[in-house]
Image (cartoon, rainbow, N blue to C red; front, top):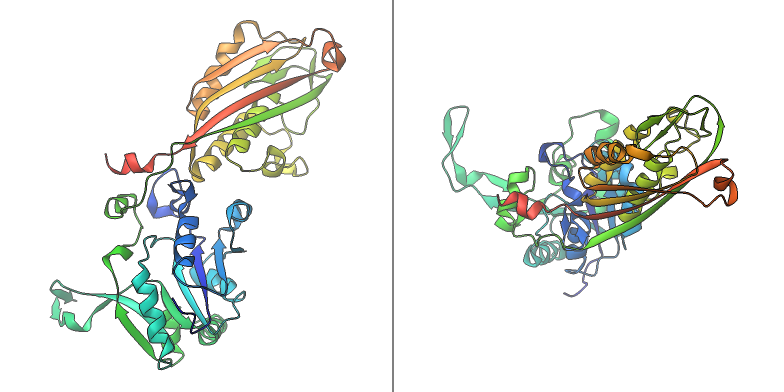
Amino acid sequence: MDCSIEVSAVLLSGGSSTRFNYPVKKQWLRVGRNPLWLFVAKRLASFYPFKKVVVVASPEELEFYRYLSPFQVVRGGRERWESLLRGLEEVESEWVMVTDVARPLIPRFVVEKLIKVAEKGEVDSVVPYLPVVDTAVYRNKTIDRRELKLIQTPQLSKTAILREGLRKLKETGEELPTDDRGVVEKMGGEIGYIPGSPQLHKLTYFSDLRFLELPPPSRDYFTGIGYDVHRFKEGEGVKIGGVHFDTPFSFDAHSDGDLVIHAVIDALLGAATAGDIGELFPDTDPRYRGADSMELLRRAITLIGRLGFEPVNIDITYIGEVPRLKGKKWEMARKIGEVANCPVNVKATTNEKMGFIGRKEGAGALAIATLKYKDWYEDSNR
């Protein structure tokens, strides 16, 4: 398509996904190997030589977006208008096309029609719509359905008027419209309309997936390795793998020192390309002083679940002269497996009396975790 006007694109992907009611946030449903937000961004970018593509992400997941994205990623706000304004601050082109991750199957012809109308220079915003085909009733009275339009995205607007409109509405405290067209309209701008598409069905509830022909997630497996080590200090027992051992020493650690659980968390985060335990639960944060490591594991499992993964299995090796795990390995495996919802194996070995572990000055643990993508495709077709 010819680049006759300068356009940037803003993809809004910072929503909380509360109505979706699924362990995976809809933004992170895997379409092939890509999370949904990246699938949408790549699809849109393939339709036009945009000057810039800006993805607005949830603040809690900003670094995960940046790790995967070839596009510029900015921090979103609590409300849609805040996120949009932050995205617009990065746009310098005359026109901006705004869409959201909830409409993943944008057809090429819609993008082309939006731009063709904008090229004529007669409007300040162009939006796709669907006509109302059923009888329409408002406050118990039939109204003329020919006068109704079901508005869709993406919407193409002049950047300056959209940005100025959002800023003015923010300053005055007026009720904000639910789409960009409404902002331009409040600024006195001219609106153009084009026929939309049923392909732009909005993904709000998990059941909406049945109406979208999205490719299923890949069947790849992902492996991560975790390692942790702690020295001993005088104390009254240690916790290993969620199980308490009566010993005359404890672990010298910021949290409860459960090195097995810490190794498991790092293995899970590694497999999900989600950083490490020090980034997620920094030992500089007083909230984690003396923290229960099993609770930290629960949070890590929730996080990787939101990002679209689920555990397949976990294998653990405890390395220590003391304490001897003896018959408690099965209890450890059971406790970890209940949280991770996958098979867990626990092994134990010594360091053959070599090094600080051999001198009984501390202990270590290794863990390997295998993950796969959560199969939303199969779940949605049950």
